Image (cartoon, one colour):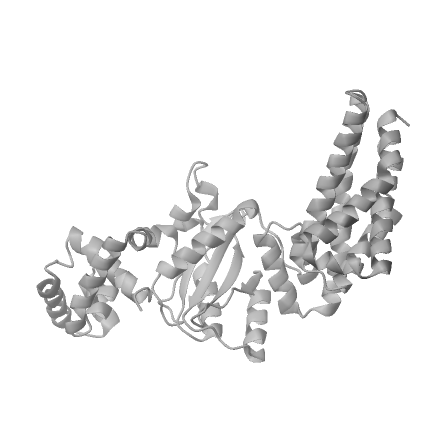
Length: 414
């Protein structure tokens, strides 16, 4: 055994104690170790065992054995059984990895620049075996979750772990039989009033999750009683439009990136929710899902609220970029709000303009959608022009009035 490994063996006990102390100091859920001597001793024993096995196996580049992985999995089971949260489990894995790398670096420094070959051997062993160890720990953790949690709760954990970039997502996906994708469409259903907890609704959502194969979770409830449902829709290679996207393109500006069944999925979930929704989407690979969620959430807040019907559709950044920009400039938003307020004195002018722009200003299709005669539609459009001084069919009308209508229908000015 080389001098680096001898130094690591000499410091193993002290390093294991330092790890346990770091857990109690930096992770609130481990505060119990200060009061539970038995649990502290077990945690210390495991930390010391990991270091000794590392020192035993890494000099010869020997992999962790099946028994080793089983022992690591048992620690995952123990932590899950004790009620450890996903956030704490992730912090444990990060902290353990950081401390092990620090210990290797300290041992190398103690050799005063020597042992480069040993250091390279250790690093080459640590990366793949560390990944196997984390996988085993996650397997044990999920094994307990499957026994303790309902299917819907497991799916919610999968959704959260994907959004957080948690490696536990691999095991959770296997447990709930959902295939992971290389790219996802983060879809946020925003609703002014979140549905109350209801077994029937949970059952409906569970049925939709299984039929559409999408991870789903409820978002946080707003202080005003609003809520959101978050779904991750896989964008599978071969989906219409996915093969023809330029490498330099911004995904959210390409509506064709969305899978063809996304509108149907949106309507199915909206009907289950049973109340008006606004739907925002953003596309991203797994490492960027947290940022995509933030974008999809903003888009959903700018999108119009609509009932669960054929008119409800997912919105991308390309659909509401004008409204998003207006919301960030108070004077512009106040001006649009004043324009929208002028329409209140007319007969159904807001609804008319909404239908007019949704049907690309086609008079016949708009009149049919509104169930009115084209002459009635023309009268209403003239009334809009009289009240605002803006022709709805002009370039200025499209830019100004469509933004004012969408901002009003989004509920932003309540």
